[in-house]
Amino acid sequence: MTTLSPATLLAGAARRHADTVAVVDGRVRVTYAELWWEARCYGAGLRAAGVRPGDPVALLAPNVIDFPRVYYGTLAAGANPVPITVPADPQALHLAHGAQLLVCHTSQLAAGRRVSARAGVPLLSVGPTRGPSDVPRLEDLGDPAPGGTALFAEPDGDPVAWADGEPEDGEVVLSCLPLGGRFGQGVALTGTVAAGATLVLLSRFTGPAALDLMLREEVTVFHGTSAMYAALLDAARDRPALPRLRSCVSRTPLPPSLGERFTTLFATQVEVAEEKSRGGGGWRRHWWCRHRR
Image (cartoon, rainbow, N blue to C red; front, side, top):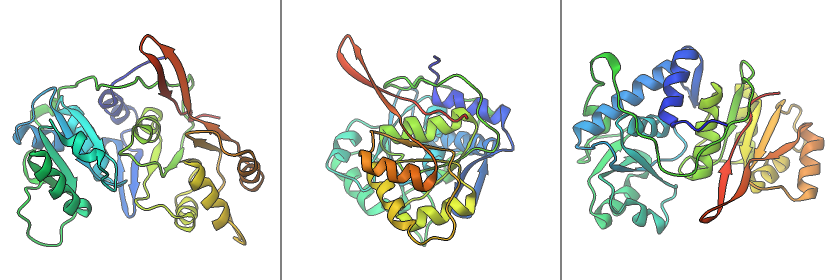
């Protein structure tokens, strides 16, 4: 079992799988080499905005390409990312308190303004724009240092344990778990990068949209919750074609009837990706995800 910084994992994946598509977001397709370059650009922008090693940086973004760019850019700058789930809930203000700044995707800018004002932290935006804005854009703040050097900081939190074995070539993962949650980060984002697989993003989950995306991108692995598996079953009724899923992952065990129906229809088992262990301070959760046959 190995514990690695997510930034180290992305840097290694950029060397080993440079031309492999790392993330698919609609029509946007980014390779591992491109994602690592873009992350360092964002990290340089954060440094230009005053972020220093060890500083917490709050991140408010849905499951879009800018989430991994900012997440890994924060780590590359030596800082600690503090993702906030979308939509922003009352805990968002608590998470933003003490952060050096808040990076907000433009789709969530109204919520980002409220959280920024109440927490008293500077606000930066990231993502597409439809016109002038008074919020500075992270993309405009800096370029990576000469030679592509970057500092790494081991992030706080539970370690991520990876099963032995190399991933299969061409693995394509659709994860509808919110990347702003710890489970989504540990299993969907970090797990896929560690495997050198392709992560397909869906910012707003519905059963029909997920099935359409699985077929279009030839998805082989799905991550979701019990409610998402139920929605997939409902959307699969009377469909002439279904995705050929090799592996499925759920945070907690599915209800027996739901699991049996899903296994029968999609011809695949649903694994549980949450384990609990007893430590000195009580129970701790460790998440893992296998991308292998």
